[in-house]
Image 1: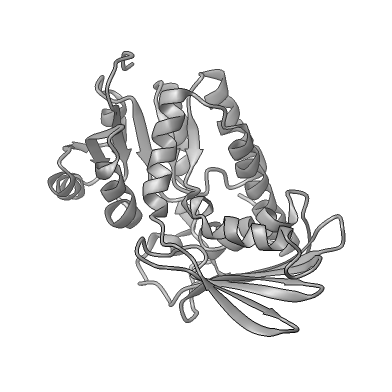
Image 2: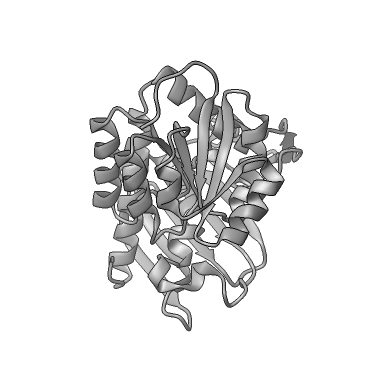
Length: 329
């Protein structure tokens, strides 16, 4: 169990995922309130590769990293099927946790992990980097100002080209599938703009050769009659975007979920006066993510709203699976 100490939060990593290599760990190195100490993998060579690049100690085996006494917090970029076990193990070892999504595959699973973190007075945060980008605040301000009239429909999509056959997202034993990976984003976007009480009124999940869903869509209804249509999949031309359609116009945001740090988002407004565009400022959403985690650990601020969103998103994905006739494991 690490002791309380002044200075940066000492961070360990459980897993050598691509997202850690490309986005999260470079952001960690730039965050002064975090210090990367060790990186663990079941494969010692992978751990060494990450350790060499990011200046950390390599560790073979996740348990061995959690046994170290120089770790205050862990980042867990593991597949969906492994996340609950190792997030729980990290919490049991007294570590604060930043986890990749989905933190829970079901609402109950997410609720249990949140409750365990609260009982141990530990920070538990799901990767919500896309929500930290100020482009979404710009959209909210325009909607609140009545630029498109009453919001009627949210349409949101995230699709990527087919993955290599060996990709972990095709493996059912690791919790693979498009819904828990890409579907996370359009479902969360629907909740951002229509509220948490969405009801699934239609859903379809298309299975691939391995049995996991490789594409899907869902129709959601809000209590006030507004609706959302979401689509996602591994066999598409790359796109991630959402459109808000109101009584008097519509707003369209491309690269809504994965804008590079240097990208300046372009928000399109279409109404009776024609089409016009607003170019927004760039933002490093992964830098914002690790800064948010460091702040939560050092200040112990309440994460109640974040936890409610995590549980609600997991429950919504669970409802999509059930409505599509797919067993929730």
